[in-house]
Amino acid sequence: MGAGLTREPADAATGYDQVFAFVREQLLSGQMKAGDRLLPERELATRLGVSRPVIREVLRALAAIGVIEIRHGYGSVVRRPDFAELGDLFTMMLAQQGEVVEDVMEARIAIERQAIRLACARATSTDLAALGEALRRVEETVTDPQIGGDADFAFHAALIAAAHSPTLASLHAAIAVLLKRSHLERRERITSLDGIETYLVEHHRELLAAVAARDADSADRLLMQHFAIGTEYQRRAAAERDRSPPTS
Amino acid sequence: MGAGLTREPADAATGYDQVFAFVREQLLSGQMKAGDRLLPERELATRLGVSRPVIREVLRALAAIGVIEIRHGYGSVVRRPDFAELGDLFTMMLAQQGEVVEDVMEARIAIERQAIRLACARATSTDLAALGEALRRVEETVTDPQIGGDADFAFHAALIAAAHSPTLASLHAAIAVLLKRSHLERRERITSLDGIETYLVEHHRELLAAVAARDADSADRLLMQHFAIGTEYQRRAAAERDRSPPTS
DNA sequence: TTCATACCGTGGTATTACCACTTTGACAAG
DNA sequence: CTTGTCAAAGTGGTAATACCACGGTATGAA
Image 1 (cartoon, rainbow over the protein chains, first blue to last red):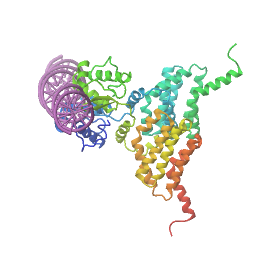
Image 2 (cartoon, rainbow over the protein chains, first blue to last red; image 1 turned 90 degrees about the horizontal axis):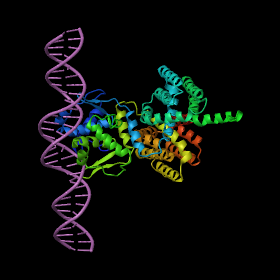
Image 3 (cartoon, rainbow over the protein chains, first blue to last red; image 1 turned 180 degrees about the horizontal axis):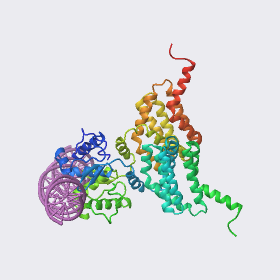
């Protein structure tokens, strides 16, 4: 895309760039709404004076970045931007860097802290209802690491949605794939601890309550505790052990 | 990419997906390092048993998402992932949503708050030196909205770098294009206020000092003030006005 | 009215040929 | 021996054409 997304039509030497710029203009200028069908490849080819393979290369590239969707036997349609697609990209790119698996947690903390703050100010009754439903799911699935991890993720995704910030939601969606893995790993690491289930559910409940009460500060505090839940619970377990040693 | 990035080679019905998966595997498995040249299109075509146009479509798609770079007369080379490329994507996708120009500020706050917290713990002497240099640039260019905005952005980018979090840096790079515009707009809106320059420079200096002192809490507090700098300064200006009315 | 089938439009792929750029090395001039 | 020029080879860029495969729609029959 460094090739096509920024280049202006004027200096576009190659036919590919011309076509790319042409379609890009149609998309950005709003002439094309989501769901609209692009001109057929053959017609685009004749109109722009290039061969059909070139058209196809452009369309494939646009499809690769998620701007359009090519449907066999139907046509190429403009897609509503879905940032979840970028999740694959991030995974693919970050895969070559390594050591990022736990680093994604930093990004999650960054996004959610801001999101919950906004949610306290902007959440609608619909948002709160969705959060309540997500909480119910968390309660139901707390015993299963796999499904429970998904429910956990869904709850926090609802939190993001309640913030009503497109950009935050986009970033969150972009790292969603990595986040889900992170959620699952946290769950697997945690479920071994006895009594963690009720503690975990209760924590989510308090988070929701804080948002419903529009109490941004305590919500933020709860969230930070939430992220430290592993170490936090280990601390509690240690304290418990001190009072009544488990062995012997 | 919804088409190619996730599909497994097994159920790949279309030749395009097969080729995409093939190249993707080579990339992800590390057989191909950055800078390596892929096989020539013609050879890929004969090896994978598909026609050259299909190969080209795949390569174009991969180039569109920044994974490879196609060089005329030389070949296709593997690129080191550059998340700044995603900035164009975000811009392109968010452009269709509108009303996002100021919303990007929420994401910036989210990222930088976490980054400065991490920076306080992880910043090396090299990072601090870079921040110092960036601060000097900010001082020099404070009068010019355009260049000053860039310097401002550079300072905060150095802050992100000091956090040593690949994911945070990636997200930041992804919205860098939008952020730069945001920086510029803030500057233009602010420069009209008298005496804002020294206030702004001083604020950056304090930020750096807090990071150097490893004081995460005060750094966070300063950063929040920094983001509210527009309203904050207006408040000060209003207070000033009360003591000595400007008109008549 | 309802369902099945044929047709048409559209993307999917292959083939072939030729053009343009980049690199490289050979050759000639110094 | 060194250096500059150019020519050849390799590689991507584009074109034209033909045919296959899938989806939708219209048309026909039940």
